[in-house]
Amino acid sequence: MKLSQGVEWGLHVATLLALAPAGQTVRRDALAGHYALPEAYLAKHLQALTRSGVLHATPGPRGGYRLARAAADITVLEVVEAVDGAAKPFICQEIRQRGASGLSPEECRRPCLIHSVMNDADEAWRSSLREVTLADLVAGLPSRIRRRNEKLMADAAS
Amino acid sequence: MKLSQGVEWGLHVATLLALAPAGQTVRRDALAGHYALPEAYLAKHLQALTRSGVLHATPGPRGGYRLARAAADITVLEVVEAVDGAAKPFICQEIRQRGASGLSPEECRRPCLIHSVMNDADEAWRSSLREVTLADLVAGLPSRIRRRNEKLMADAAS
DNA sequence: CTATTACGGATAGTAGATATCCACGATTTG
DNA sequence: CAAATCGTGGATATCTACTATCCGTAATAG
Image 1 (cartoon, rainbow over the protein chains, first blue to last red):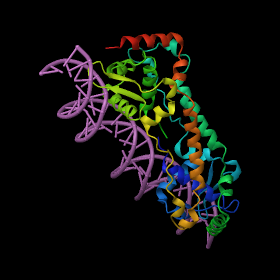
Image 2 (cartoon, rainbow over the protein chains, first blue to last red; image 1 turned 90 degrees about the horizontal axis):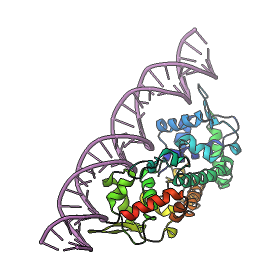
Image 3 (cartoon, each protein chain N blue to C red; image 1 turned 30 degrees about the horizontal axis):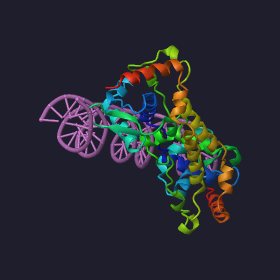
Image 4 (cartoon, each protein chain N blue to C red; image 1 turned 60 degrees about the horizontal axis):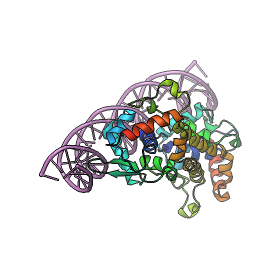
């Protein structure tokens, strides 16, 4: 079980965009340069975030990305699911129906308990991530670093 | 983020072994045949479960596997970690220290908040799995199926 | 000693994540 | 309108981890 590194990129970039002046777009190369990320690959994750409604993209000169909503309305879970997908990590293959002791479909109307336990754990994980917003991440930054990044974002206006 | 299918195998097999008469070993081919699993590959997961102290393996004629401890003392988390590894799914690469706005090491004495949030969620997941034992999984089986598998395990004695 | 059974290393195949590039379309500026 | 800018999405290549199998070794019961 491993999360893709794109999740880390998405969370840092979204937090950064939350520091830009309201409504201002930031170009992709500025975002990539800020964390020394490969721009071409970051683009894929930014596309996913845009499709999921976390970011808003503006094409053309003076275009770029901004948050699609207020930072307080975007949860960490949304960013994670946009980049990594929302599929459940445990894929029940119903092996109880196979083999020597294969259960009949009638005996499997109730979902597999193992499946339920794994899904409950997944829901606990998601709930935990749903309780934190981008505004919380911004608020947690040391104020010195926050001011510094705010200035860099303001200067990134084309 | 995806869990390996070996986790499902491990949980089903461990639950099955919890139904065997106390102290009795069950051969690997019986376990594999029970769920129509490829025996050679299942062996890898059984080895991991043995190394982790979840199962006890006995070599030689009339050998096989049994639970290393009472079913009530083995948590689902132990089985999952034995098969899938205990590594945290979020690997923080400290991208805040890289690129144009790279923070100095002194500015990073406090752990990255994003890292903390992801680790908290992971801990919520683990806690959820730690609260369920193999005895709970056995207790959740419909009694008809439970009796059937108990009989099959008893008959599997070599 | 011999048959049985698990252990562990070597070896492939496969799927998904990582990474890059380019043609296309949309938009703003002049 | 024309040119420059910028995001979109498809094609492609590489790398890693999971899936899967085989075989020689070690240990044990009879």
